[in-house]
Length: 358
Image (cartoon, rainbow, N blue to C red; front, side, top):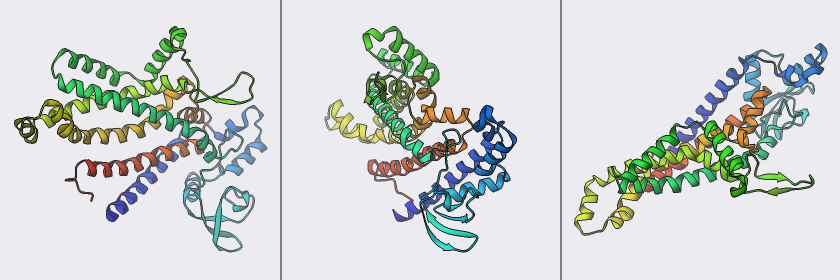
């Protein structure tokens, strides 16, 4: 177990390093100047130079990249000049000085995701604290809907293989996998939030917490979770259903199932005592990937439904060339994916003791 975790964590750090590198350089080759976006119509040459110096835009690209890695690293070097944008005197870092001289310091600190370019210097960590929980709630609700409905439809489809109900489920799941999330979001919001609003009571847009009519306090609005959770869960539901069907049919053809039937066990006992647990392995693997991808795939769904989550924040950051927010969001999604992979490996071993971690 220890050897496995060390190897997995090492590979994960390399993966995160690759993600950071690709996104950083890809973002910087896109057209547009973040400094100009921050100044807007108030731009002049002196202000532009001040902004570029403050955020390090006047440094060579590779130097900016090294400084960004330095900010992310728990162990880092910092220039002691106050005007330098990585100075410890800027109150950006929560750190403990390990070694110090007149020019620089070597410190142990919390990773610093920097400040937003577009939100008056607000810390990226604070933005993530405000938006990430909403996205996790949306993704969790979606995967729960997809899991239970997907398993149920997969069971029905396998039990009634090649019959009418199996073909209907196949058509529905194929349609679910084919529809783009932005298209299904618009259709679902229009039908259930507008045309059928008087019957459903659901809104076309809205977040988990809404400001009251007097602008005094926020109230919990769980009904706003229903439509985006359904839309976000459509594709994983379709995948889980098909995986469950195919996995169960594969298990039914194995010798131990034939032996169980020969002993006189009825179909329900064979299904739930033997086949179901073994058929879950590929489904569990799929769930981990889909949950992580939901954090990224929620971009269109959150934006269309007005859900105040990480996906909506990514869209706004892209529009404003807000690199720190984009990098913070990508890091969170990548880290979640890595942690889920490790967790799923452990569950896979529990479901199938023959599998060994290495």
